[in-house]
Length: 221
Image (cartoon, one colour):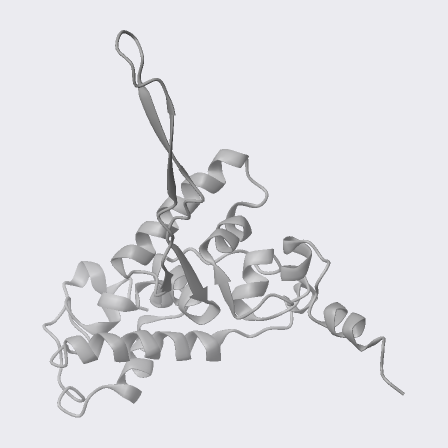
């Protein structure tokens, strides 16, 4: 017999019919989300105008490459003119009908690295945290994020070393300071230095950066 209930069971399994926030809290959002969706996850409990400001900042981050994303080209729309073309006070106005601006889709891993780089990770158990970590809200207290944080930092470091293969691990211009400041704040300088040493290019391993001033040494636990 055909399984006529299967479509409903499938839709329930993926969270279809739930609102966006509940879907995030239940870990039923897709790995990729649109920029608009990410804006709502960030600003869902704030006043409406905050979402617009959040969206503009995210759009800029995607545009300049701080937040890795895939561009979805928009559509130009169809010009529609109205008004009078006669003399006197007559004017012609043009509106675009069906215009769709460019959009971006963003993977949770790239978003998580971006927020870590900003040192602006959300509180555990919030909708944004659930999507970034791929966890339900009730798992917030159980998660030990150190392994994921290590993997995220190492991925960012690898990408930077592809661009600047001579960059050292430590020192004022080293990889730890360049891309790992948020991780140092969360763990220790020595821990993040160890993560970097594991994946450093062969020509970089063992080289020491220029000694740091004593005043900054205290911050590197």
